[in-house]
Amino acid sequence: MSDKSNADDARIIMQLYDLRREAEMRKARAWFAGWWPRSADEIVQMINSPASPQENAWFRQVVGYWEMAASFVLRGALNEELFFDSGGELWFVLAKIHPFLEEARQKANSPYLLQRMEKVAARTEEGRERFQMMLKRAEARRAALAAKAS
Image (cartoon, rainbow, N blue to C red; front, side, top):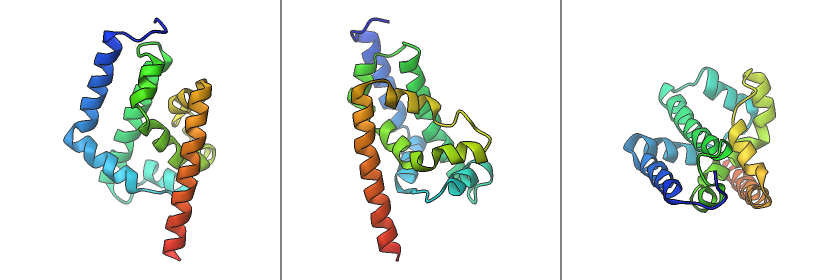
């Protein structure tokens, strides 16, 4: 694929946007935005034996969506720069789970968990910078939630 975006890339971006607007996906994204795992064990529980099957479905829907979108970039089906312009939520999803990701992969026997998202985030300087910024924001939010709970 060309390094320059084209009308096909724009169509894919619009289709991805439409999928994010779908009613159940909106519910899944809203739930994920409020879910702040505190450990790898919480992530593994969500994957393997969730207290709520609905929350498990939403987790899989959000993670699966962003893994699919990342795959488009990694396989050359979607221009990376154009994706970066509108795919910021990927970094948010990854940053929330990343502090526990390696341990969760081991405990869940799921070595590929968020692997495509991680690759997209690390491919370019812009991606790495955006990821570091989002990690700091996620850490601050997690700390604020912990302070509020105590």
